[in-house]
Amino acid sequence: MIKVELEGFDEVQKMFERLGSTGERYFQQALTETAIEGTSGMKENCPVLTGRLRSSIHHESPKTKGYTYNSKAGSFNGKLGINLTGLSAAFGTNVDYAEYVNNRVAFFEKGERRALDVLEQRLTINYDKAIKELT
Image 1 (spheres, helix red, strand yellow):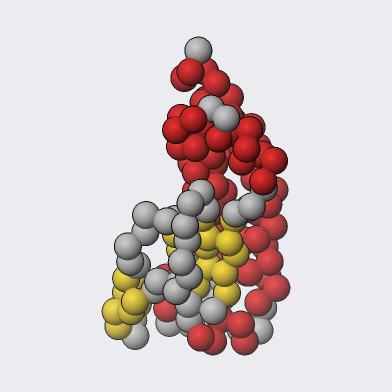
Image 2: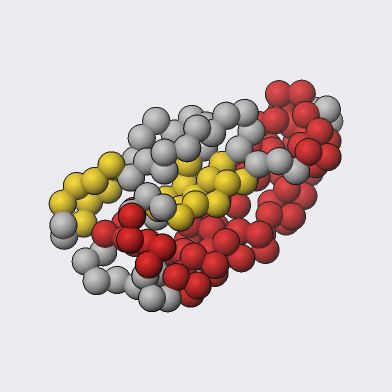
């Protein structure tokens, strides 16, 4: 299993939480948007043989109930198997062999880097949206 959890950022999260439920909603939105970017980065760089690994890559939030995907090999439960609570998001794959794929660096780390590259921008944009909604 390969996964990246987006949580923490205590000081930034507190800034959003001071805005009440509107701030919390926009903070979660920023984390989800960041996880989507990471997912895209992983998928774009993922090696493909049967398509199972690439199909399994997805993002989750505390509201994610399940994830099922299909490939040439069949239908699979793709849930990452982590318990996300509060304001958080994650992305990755639960495919056992993902860690052993030859170009793991190429697909996993590029996805993680892409997420981290957009995180600050997503937080700033969504904080501005929360402020605008409240004024």
